[in-house]
Amino acid sequence: MSLLSTVQGPADLRRLSPADLGLLADEIREFLVDAVTRTGGHLGPNLGVVELSIALHRVFDSPYDRILWDTGHQAYVHKLLTGRQDFSRLRMQGGLSGYPSRAESEHDVIENSHASTALGYADGLAKAHQLLGTPGRHTVAVIGDGALTGGMAWEALNNIAESDRPLVIVVNDNERSYARTIGGLAHHLATLRTTQGYERFLALGKGALQRTPLVGQPIFDALHGAKKGFKDAFTPQGMFEDLGLKYLGPIDGHDVGAVEQALRQARGFGGPVIVHCLTVKGRGYRPAEQDEADRFHAVGAMDPYTCLPISPSAGVSWTSVFGSELLALGAERPDLVAITAAMLQPVGLAKFAAEYPERTFDVGIAEQHAVASAAGLATGGLHPVVAVYATFLNRAFDQVLMDVALHKLGVTFVLDRAGVTGNDGASHNGMWDMSILQVVPGLRLAAPRDADQLRAQLREAVDVPDGPTVVRFPKGDLGPAVPALERIGGMDVLQRTGPAPEILLVAVGAMASACLDASALLLAEGFTCTVVDPRWVKPVDPALPELAAAHRLVVTVEDNGRAGGVGSAIAQAMRDAGVDVPLRDLGIPQEFLAHAGRGELMEEIGLTGTGVAAQTAVFAKHLLPNRGANQHHAG
Image 1 (cartoon, rainbow, N blue to C red):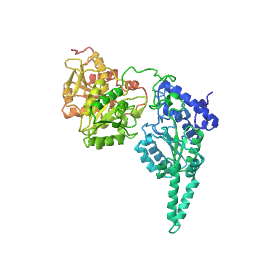
Image 2: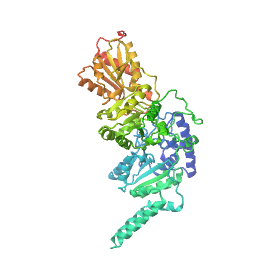
Image 3: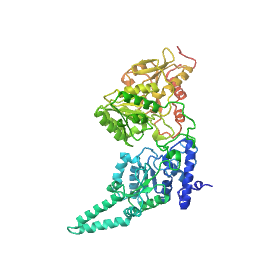
């Protein structure tokens, strides 16, 4: 029997000997490599936190003590140590989430998977424990050095530092930014700074000296200055202590004993403490350790020995088409600059960055700053292209509205992973952008249907000098090109199944293929359709209400939440134009979708060709009397 199989909860960990802990760490790494290469998932980050996770659960009493994982993609080991060892369907429908999940375990607290939020949660939880009379209940927040680039983390630290509540902040530093501090003096100073006795001594000394006439205050100030000088000479994190936070470290994050010792000291202090752990992303798996790009941050299903994908993609991704076209535009337009928030590779900016490093800005996990900085770049005469995942633009809405749109600045936002993303769960689905952005005056929003349109609409977007533009596209590979029959206004007509079609299917972006499939299925039931791609969905093309007036039913289909989305905007435009044709909007239900494959979710919510046809047929049979099977109007 393996050691890992005997660990069904944190209490089992505390019965293990130091020698057992090393064996357990090895078993966990073997398990992770075997399991995650079968399903895909976040491999490198979890290989780096094995010993740290073991130490956390040996020192703190979860779930009474609350352990919070910022972002949460590094919580696989935490799952294993809290009784969840079936990874056979990791990130798949019915299997474990790739992030903490309250539905899975009482040990999981935060499941939003957006970075830099854990310290805010920790501040609130510590306050709640104090107000509810459980001051001995500890709160522990694990945050990566990358997430500390986010402004929310520093806002929280500013508030945490003002308190005396028991709160431990573990900085998981896997970028090797600091050399390991060794030697007895450094360890002694760290111990002194995090013991209650030392703090009582400082408090008593301060009181005594400040009561001494004339010389007391100057002596205290001098001693306090000397203390800071000694501190800064031996630790790299005087900045944290300047905020009022005690600091322990750097600690070897792969030495369970050292991490345990630091965590016990931090727990005993009774106030906010930073525990700085140095870890190696991808630890123990040589291919990950040698991967210079991202240490196997996230992998698909692959052979663990060759690292080749189990099912190689035969297609071209939306992301790669965008990246190549932006590179071409960069050669034509010296005023184009690229900005991203710690996602240079995932959003397709790597080629542009390699060719134009001085025109590429990775601002860290700081979407608000990315957009405000883009506003400054545009004010200075450049045209910024801000590339982020669709769900992360939510974090910078105020800057889009008040810093870019208000000032009528030419900034282009490229939203990758728009619509349903699937396996990464609710907070990664890009289902909010076309609703949120509808309220922004002067903003133009494009939803390309294929590679050709992505290239064309990106070029159209960066040609707009006087307001924000958005180009959004989904996760995954592109399908075949979808040609247009004709252009009406700025819209492309993709299909007509009769001389006077009854139903207008408005296909938003990548939903074009599903709408064409639906049109064929509806024709078999006797309903004729026009399928139109509006291309630019905000503002609504003035030609669209006029086209709608020539039909008896309008159905909009979008991979966005139904509330306030494109369907709502088209309905309003039709009302404003006095077009009284029934409209039904199909889209993503306004709820948090459970993790599953993108295709599974699209089928479940009815956004496949079959689903769109079935729902449209129901509407048509209700709204178009005496219509039905074998009444074709094909021409």
